Length: 158
Image (cartoon, rainbow, N blue to C red):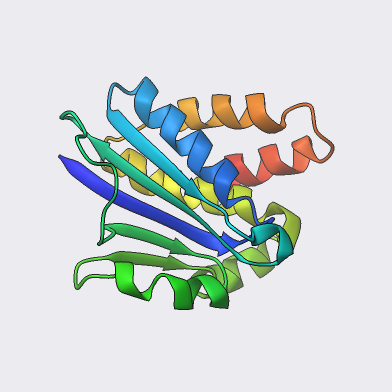
């Protein structure tokens, strides 16, 4: 088993946080994981990327040219990730979840937790991680920050 996962959004959207939490949860499940952050000029509104490779075998070379799963949270990220798409790439976009986020009253500051939950469900269905582990790492990362209760509710209610 091997999956190439690419997370992409604008700087400040929490892409690096999502990648860090997912990678830790996949390692805890016993997988080999490589995580390559790419956040160039995101502090000035640039694209933030996280390349994650997960495998049950040793990872010799962490880079990849095609993603199996691609999360895209902005128009800039959409443009930047075109070359990583293959005919079998599963693409998860902000637009496909717009109605659900409106119904659940999820604001821009909590979208990263919402999409962490979306990815968690997908990865758990592939036996790559456990939701409990993701929640544990999310709580460690954000539990002492303002707005934790809102994030906890969003992650728990998806």
